[in-house]
Length: 203
Image (cartoon, rainbow, N blue to C red):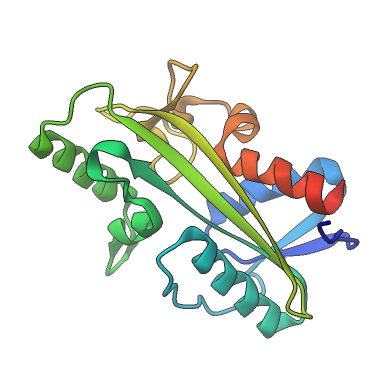
């Protein structure tokens, strides 16, 4: 039996404006407003785990410890089958530069590695998202989502964030970055995890 969330405002343990915007749109119909970690001036904890669940739990518990509020964190990434499911939990690390994250660089690196490996087409990949909702008493609930698809090159589209311009979900002939945000929020890995979260803790 999962624990129900009974508040009207939830802390989202992310400094990523794109993720926060997605969360605002997802939570909107459920009468829950969101506040981000940056707005609360929270430090970004070091993500030292090698699993999505581990890193999401670090972020959620750090936000709870800093504010005393229940917090939702997600850790997500893309797994490329021909690259032994890399970058996976290290997706954001592949984009790190001294001046912030550069996902064009990360996508170019991914494409270059696939070319060097002679990876056959279609180049299969999946986005994965793991949500951890943590309470001040130490309790947490975990929900996982995924969406399968193929990688395209050159990249396409202007919306979305991260690897969205490179990822075409199964059943579509457009990338996440070419998709209307409302449609993406209906079919994405985050939407899959979110639907499970809503059913478990808000339903």
